[in-house]
Length: 559
Image (cartoon, rainbow, N blue to C red):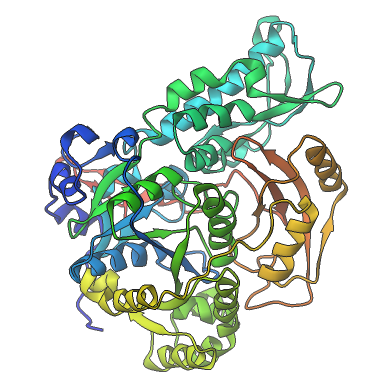
């Protein structure tokens, strides 16, 4: 690796010469009539113009080991390997999630890749983009407003205000909104009750958008949303509030996948953004489906480690979208292995090959888990400037021991050129044709059986403890007819366990499920473990504090 300094992400993005999006679309055999243009460099693709084309592409997932709080560059690797495949002459397309404003202004800053492996226009993608998140929050809060108006206007459905489960949403980290009181304005102020907000990526509307296959499917899913229960403990759904039509109206354009480009001018679909720790963590089914109809190789990513995003990609998204993934890339870094090997967060830049060796068990377990789904994988060793040769060799030795192929990845510094070896390794997996994809569990199992299968086989827990609210919720959900849906486990991303302090590949622990709630429109149930929260807070020094707009209109601080 050279020691040449690399400019900030935003400086690189601002210096890039972008291709007109019409030209990018032409690479995929898309004409202007098949696009909805959002300026010169962004467009949406009309679904009705591409869904009659057959799927022809191979699907490759990029996932990772359990990360450090700073992230391991999974999105950067996803962009970089796609750029590398196109350099090698392949018709490859990238599929990623849209960034949430919460993390952008919180800890992470920009979330469109990094260095010379980014999607652009980076500023637009990280901020308002094509308005998808605004449409999602509007549709979500419209349902909230209709619900509270129904209570105010006489409550003909007999909804129990104490058993309303539908929250409000905002795309921002704001801890004070976790638990609030509403309706305190007197007789005309509505019915007083407790309320809460979730961040937009945790909204069921976000999950529905990411899983809906077309406009009709979207409306049907919206109609199935459970907003609470009656005094007789019967579920109340959005269709009983007559909400699904207006909600679909707000979302009709947002459902179309967004087409942008990488720094090297290749096509990229960036659409929807559910979190991987509290939702299913994948970009939209329609974006991936569209890409598979237009390209030969489709590279997509799933949120956080493989215990979260990859498991949900395989068990939820691939089940819904009828996808057959053919290869996986597991991103690893020296610093994450050191953390899992016992090094403190303050020591991650200090050489420590011993900690790398001890932490390798975390990566090895992720590789074992990917194999459980019948998908062959390669390790992408995402290199950082502080990595020593001894530490890199320790990872290579560990991969040799478990017979895993590992490739050094330098896409942050070198763009597509730095990912050629990784691209060649992916091509080898695709050529070998060894994938025999299968979900981890049969959706027809009981909710508890599915939770326990994930906990035992993916997390390696000895068992699962259910708190009383979770047991009551499971009985209720199975009574509602939601027992044969997939399970989406909400869990910390920093550990295989539901305790973030358990590093490496912990054993001898029991996972605790404290509640289970329906995501009936999305088509799964959510199991809450540990202290996971659906509304994050800002840290002591938010990324927002370093952001500004200069007099010439350029932006600073967006990484």
